View (cartoon, each protein chain N blue to C red):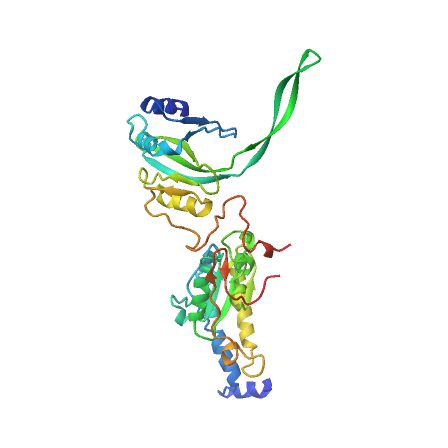
Length: 191
Length: 195
């Protein structure tokens, strides 16, 4: 079994300019994932599928995650010079993390009996630039699942052969799985 | 009519009844349900039609695959908003006299999925429900109980007067408005507004 770090090194050996980051997972599953740059994703996905040592020939699952803007409080150490004496003080600094949408793919290798490898792609933001390259040309099984991500999260998959809504009706305009979505009939909920 | 002379006549081989009783007797004992299921309640509905529970004992075993031949719509399961227009359209295609049973929490109110983005909050927003059967899902016995209650309701109907059934009332609606897909939700008139 190759670890994500080893797979990352293998990707970097093939594409020296690739931006690949291993995202740790703090949950009990502790399943780390690889974050790919959207511009290089199609190339690297093809490499993951075709490389004889990896052969991730099966994408079992594709899903979306919505990461809204969050304020993170961090303690920052600063040096201050007061009356000629250098003091180190801690300050609480609030920082806003950018909002983005994420597409997550679970890959398996049927040929080598390995997996899953989790890869992630992130959009630039949640509003006007929520586009990612489609991985359907690499793995056919992503077709319906990317349509579902498009329907429920609003990620536009460029290069998808048939990007239509799959669960909601065609003239529906919202994306119900986004965190800020409020159902139209929410006011009718019983007390 | 008095029961005593009627019984005497029956012993002689003569049956006396009223048109109303005969008509209602015929209606209540041959309720043919429409053969369709929406979710897990449909599994209980299927179980009710099988040998162990045997809905045939109540004359309702003839599940018809066409709405043109059905009298009873058993709404068995969660109605998604995307499915709601088709359910109403199927009901409109059934000939009168026709009845609706809302089977299970979802068909009554949306049930555990009420807050879902694609779940209709009860089929009674668009269809005139005769019998509500609570449960998640209701057991087959509960469906049979609901069917018996529907039969009692039919048996007690007067064919004339203000309480007459819908198909004998020229002013009653023959069709129910089919909801349409809007940009955020289903649009179109509803039978009642949710409280």
